[in-house]
Every structure is written in structure tokens, then in C-alpha cells.
Image (cartoon, rainbow, N blue to C red; front, side, top):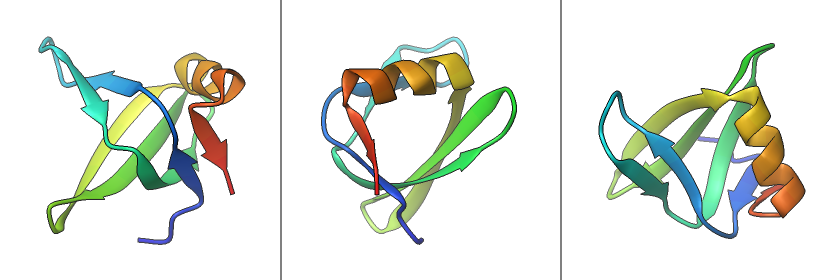
Length: 69
């Protein structure tokens, strides 16, 4: 995985209708689409992936909790 950003604060996502899940701080890969951002990160030797709405991604950027490289 080629990281192109890092999580430096609380970034959360929801898997289906479940509770909010915290993405661990550290390097992530971000792939942008017109309506969403796909975030990938390593966790315990496996890669985790989630898609969040682009507005939510932009909010995380403006709050400084996701920092692009």
C-alpha cells in the first residue's frame, strides 16, 4: 500500500448500520471519486478499506485530522 496521507486525529466511519469505528492514526491511502473518498490502511497485517462521503473527507481535511502528503 502506497500511503499518500496520514491520520493525525479522530477519523471515524460507520460500517453499515453499526457503530462508528475509529481509523487508527498513521499512514493511509486515499483514492478520490466525485462523491466519495476511499480510505485504506494497514491494521494487524491486513488492509482495511472504507468509503466516506466526499463532504466528510473535506471536513476531516479542514479540521487537520487527515493530512495529505
